[in-house]
Amino acid sequence: MLLLFKVVLLVALIVWPMAIISAYQYGRLGRLLLRLDKKKTGTESDLPPLSIIIAAHNQAPALRRHLPVILNQDYDRFEVIVIDMASTDETKSVLERLELQYANLRHTHTPASARDISIARLALTLGFRSAANEWVVITHPDCEPISSLWLSRIGEAISAPKHFIQSTLLASPEMVLGMARYDEQRSSWLDYKTGFYRLWNTMATAQHVLNGHAAVRADACNLAFRKSYFLEHGGFAEAQDLKAGAEELLVNHTSTPYNTALLLAPSAMVIQDRVSSEQTWAMQRLFYAETRRHQHHAHLYRLEQSWRQLLPWLVAFALVLPLFVCCAFLFMEMEPIETRSIIILIVVLFLLIIIYTITKLISFNTTTRALGCRSYYLSLLLLEFQLPLQNLSARISRRFTSQNNFRKKFI
Image (cartoon, rainbow, N blue to C red; front, side, top):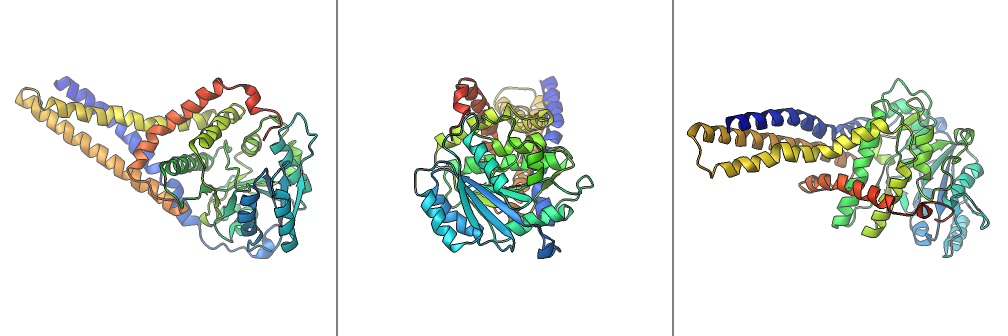
């Protein structure tokens, strides 16, 4: 029994420092955001003109609701180009009516005869080629900026990236990675899951870039890219027939530690309409599982994220499970010295678990508050346990899904 006591205590003292460091890292992005989201010193004349491109398919209600918010941005020089991907609803009439109100809005469409290339990739390529300005901002029809400073913050990140992130590696960016979250007006369990999943990936992506690596992922709802750099690298030439993941793979295939800026400013966030159903969310994760297969320079990133995802399970087996087992031992007949040892072990394990949990909740909610997201309390622990299972489920589903579902010209 004393040997078991020593083994359990040793394992706990090995696992706990790693767990507490990981828990503290949850707050890194939040602390950085709170420090950097200040009024910038650049003037409007220093900021570059921007072209915003939006690829839309049968999303007339979303365009009617969100596009005016984008068009009313507090920024002098910008245009908005909407590419209609063969919509059969009122998309065209909505765009025509808005064009009468806003001189900086125009739209085009993808040709119906397009073959051997994803329509989404073709639409974005048309948007890049139609853009009148060197810097192109990509977002989605169901998104809107959290504030009127969205484009100003993007312009500042382009002209003075070190105002947002202290880095000696970056002088002039070729791409700017922004942040996005889901609309949180409702609070169903699906909203909690999708919101946490996206926030967790945002934090993982940001930390990887902050550590001096090329970007592996990007949020397709809030991304700025230099037009000449896009054309120089052939646009979406790689994996051009994939249905989804165009923006993520564009960043993944062209990002380096020296050309990628993080837009670390809560006022530059974009809010996307909430996920409508479990089936829709499952389909999103399934398509990312396919996109993941085409990523470059992702080995270190995947190793880091796998470790972070599995750490809560390791804590459960190294701290929580032994705690319950020790409590069960108290009801058994043992020598007094063994009983004292078990009580000491229970107290130590309980304190380690409490300190770890409190540190994690405080750190994680530091980031959620900085981003303007909802706070997570004990639900965070359950969501962490689900995360690796959800990713594993998506990868297994991908293996049993025909490749034809991920390719060709379908939306």
